[in-house]
Structure formats: C-alpha cells, structure tokens
Image 1 (cartoon, rainbow, N blue to C red):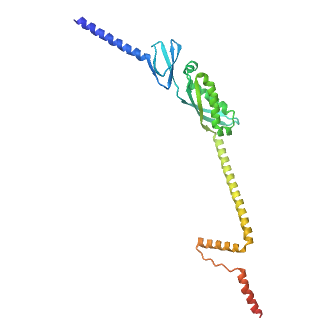
Image 2 (image 1 turned 45 degrees about the vertical axis):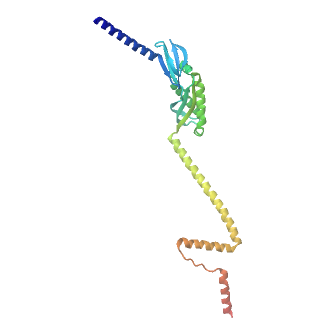
Image 3 (image 1 turned 120 degrees about the horizontal axis):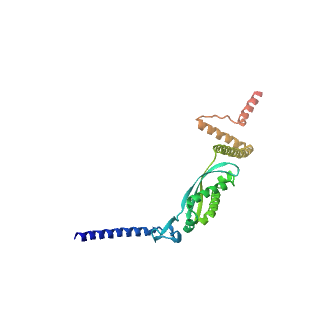
Length: 263
C-alpha cells in the first residue's frame, strides 16, 4: 500500500516536471514580434529569413533571432570641432534621423548600425563644413544639412539603413568672433539710422523750400502762419500775446502827423 502511494506521488511529480519543461520549451519557442519590428531568424548560424510581425516559432537552442526596430530613431552626433574654408574654428551639434529599411542587410553587414552611422556622420560633417566659408555655414544651414544627409545616406544604404534627415542644432563660434560680429552689427544699425535721419532731413528740406516759395508769393499767408504760430505758443505756455500792427497801418498816421506839422 505504501509502495503504491510512493509510486503515485513519484508519477505525479514526473508529470508536473514534464509539464513545467513543456511550458518552458513552448515559451522559449514562441516569440511575438510587434508591427513596428522585424526579426532575422538564424538556424544553426545560417540565415533562414526575416520573420514578423506576429507569432514566430523557433526551435530552442537551434534557432536564434535578432530584432530590429523599423521606426525612425534620432541619434545625437557628438559635438564636432571643425575648420571652415576661411579657417574659422566652429563647434557644431547635430542629430541624425534614421531607420532600418532592410533588416536582413543590417544583420549581415553591420554589427551596431546606430553608432556606425553616427561616427560616419560626424566625419562627413567635418568634411562638408571644411568646404564652405563661415557666412555660407550660417546662412545656408538647411542646405548643408541636406547635403550631409545625402552623403551619409548613400554610404549606409548597403547596410539596410535609411537616413531621412540631418539637423544642425547649434553652431558655436569663438568668443572673439562673436564680439567682432556684435560690433559689426552695431555699426550697421548706426549706419542705417544715420541714412534714415539724413533721408528724413532731405525730404523735410524739400517741403520747407516749397513752403517758402509759396509764402513768398502770398504775404498774407505768411502773416496768417505767424498768427497761428503765436496762438500755439500762447496756448502751450498760457500767455497773452499782443502783436503790433503791420507797417502799412503805422505809416498812414505818421504821414498825416508830419503833414500837420509842416502846415
């Protein structure tokens, strides 16, 4: 009786152990590949093909897979110090946008595609910057970034990688050059201000000259303008201004007085 119980317990333990092993084998034999990933399957070291998305079955120990994300990845390029064509040293921060388009090529041609692309992009960045002067670098940043992206993309296409864009995030200049550029910008602002002031004075002088010509042809208008000016002065300073009569009104009484004296 005891022997039968022991045998039943041993059998149950074996069954449980077998179930655990089966579950472990099944769990290791099943892989779930998301829609945004692909996996390269190897069997005994040889390529079987690209699998996914969905459920993927592999033979434990015999099969292995390498996953690749097909989404766009942003890789920061370490800050690069470079010399422009006119021998100005600049420090440039950039970023690369890339994605895997052929997982099989990537698996067979490059071990770590992200650092490999970043290193080549850094070298290309220095080369392209060395072919342009500082003004071109500052004013045509987008065109230079597109050129770098094109060169890098052409080089990494055999790796199954696509470079979608390169962004130049920052261009740092030497402090001495920054001060010189600030002085130049200030001088340019002063020059423009002087030109604007001179132009305004020139236009005003033309208007004054035209007004003077018109006033010379109409003395009454001159007197009215003088009266308007006096009224404005009195209004601003709260004054009462008494204006003398014109000479023509003074001349008549003086002439009559002299005539009476002679008589």
